[in-house]
Length: 160
Image 1 (cartoon, rainbow, N blue to C red):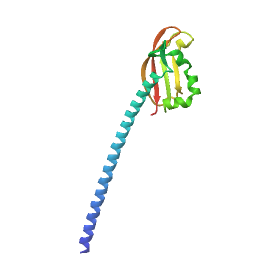
Image 2: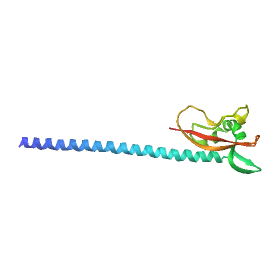
Image 3: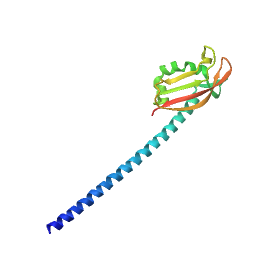
Image 4: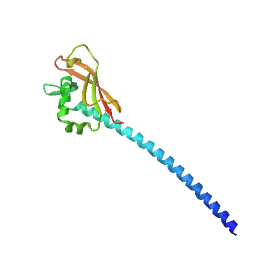
């Protein structure tokens, strides 16, 4: 009788151990897939967030071109040239607009010269540390002193 009871206890213990192994393996797989899904959702949300921020930046009156009070679809290079000083003096306000963005800048195709017309980059916000994902959109830059347009690329370096 005791040998039969020991055999049944051994079988029951083996079933419990196998059940626990299967349960632990399924939980590990479940959490791995859930983590992967969360990472994909995070990337999607960051894409949407930074793309909408690009649109907000393009629409800011601090950067927009205007002729006789009418705004057009371009960025004013003379406003961009002095914006860094304005953003430094009003850092709390622009921090609420730009959020946790590491850097915002505009790259322009270089030409010869020495004034803001020939500047190849306008650093708008933050510093360059080389980390993070870059989101970009082409923009039209208007130089009011020269009455000319150039093409630039508005870039945002977001968090990883």
